[in-house]
Length: 229
Ligand code: DC
Image (cartoon, rainbow, N blue to C red; front, side):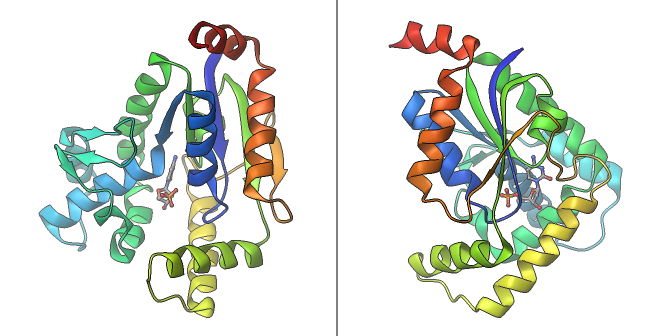
């Protein structure tokens, strides 16, 4: 049993915010695996542009990328803080291509397993409960209706002062859902033993409290959290 909370779910369901707040609330590590795929995509774009690139060359670049997830949040690529750069639309689109590469996935999955086995952690992504940590102590699958996910993404963009056209956001979301589900390895899928939380009608605070309560019920976390208390 791995002392890990696996949180999977579709784009714009609120995974990152929930995972971060659960981790802060329990005093454990947060590992945002999407940020790792994004960092590899950014490195590739900088080196080769977004044009076609051979799978092996892509994997070689991923293998040589130094990706760090500092405890205070964000992501470092070869020592540079790229937390903002990886969120750009172009990078998001190219990340979906990079995430299709099975070799890149193997490299990042290995990195994620190493990080997650060092200490109790919350990992979020698409394949945490199905591939990365099949023996996670707790698996959560977050879902919400496409309409509410669009609303959440629009609100998030507006908070950042970015343009947000509902129609465009909706189409982008549907397309990313399709790509995430169609991925041959590591595609988005709820693990059979995951707890499904449909957050459509829930406030985020409620979801955090619910997940933290479920984590505290897990013996491996009870032992480790007690040691830290
Ligand atoms: O969660 P996110 O939107 O930051 O993820 C960015 C991309 O990486 C998205 O295309 C899905 C992909 N991804 C993945 O394939 N596997 C993961 N564990 C996490 C993200």
